[in-house]
Amino acid sequence: MEKIDIKSISKGELEEAMASIGGEKYRARQVFHRLYRAGSKSFEEMTDIPVVLRAKLKEKFHITRPVLLDSKKSLSDGTTKYLLKLEDGNTIETVFLPESKRSTICLSSQVGCKFSCAFCASAPFGFSRDLTASEILDEVLFVREANPSASITNLVFMGIGEPFDNYDNVMRSIRVLNDKDAFNIGARKITISTCGLIPGIERLKSEGLQVELSISLHSADDKVRSELVPINKKYPIKDLISACRDYTNTTNRVITFEYILLKGVNSTKDDALKLAKLLKGLKCKVNVIAYNLVKSKDYLVPEERDIKIFIKTLEDSGMNVTRRKSRGEDIDAGCGQLRISRM
Image (cartoon, rainbow, N blue to C red; front, side, top):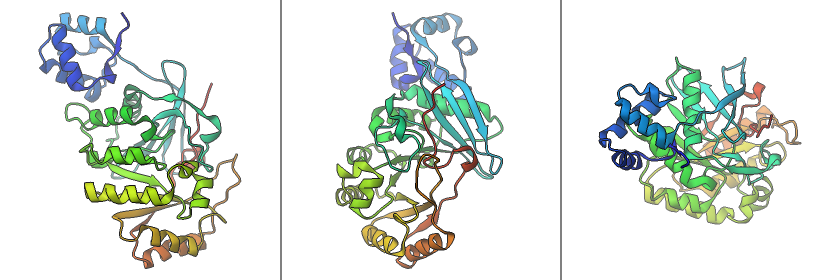
């Protein structure tokens, strides 16, 4: 019988499995604590579990662990990018972003991506498969172990892949990340970023989790956005903003709109005015990001003066605006720079 990946099941499912092999339900909480708090890599390390029960767990389950193929650390800000090999040989990139008062992990949700955003380094490599919930959790476990002195405070699903295209596994992983017997990371410290998959937005509003929602918008014009984010042809801006208004009305939560500034494409004062008009009355904030150069793309970074004019125009229109600081650009770990690597 093929063994079950123990990190792919919920605490409730583990309680049922524990009962089926003669263990008390509370043992599931102990196993959760060992897997996710202590980072146990084998059942033998779970010394607070009886030996006989450990043997039964080993017969029924296995514990996954990615392999580090490469890592690069930014000399400018300490950002570290990890290339991890999964059990089937596929690879993903995960990024650790340390700051003085918090530490963030940028998580991948898929091996590759289907959505071909024009400015993204991952796009040319296509899509291989979804990550399992276990593989997503392994990203967090690996980065935490590699940085033992850091306290992981924030998680962002902004790596390779579209989280809402792998909705069930992403949500399963989030519930474990949020679980007090596991990672105990507050839901408000977890951000899901989507290129605009409306069905995912509609599902999320009913989850009852106070996670942060981020939308990669990048233009208030359908023609421009369809060139930058092709899924806009299926879910145009009017429908996307309508779904966002419904989401904020239902959840009373703020949506963050990510806006990458590309010279000569979406970075003029007129572009900013159109964006302010589009988002007027919506409970939201805008994160403005200067484009991170990708060698294989022809896009350019706007002049600093134009970036400041864009931001001031939004502020003068009453928008809540933040200029997001680029991190790890010197190691290709910035927004849009991650790519699927094969070795």
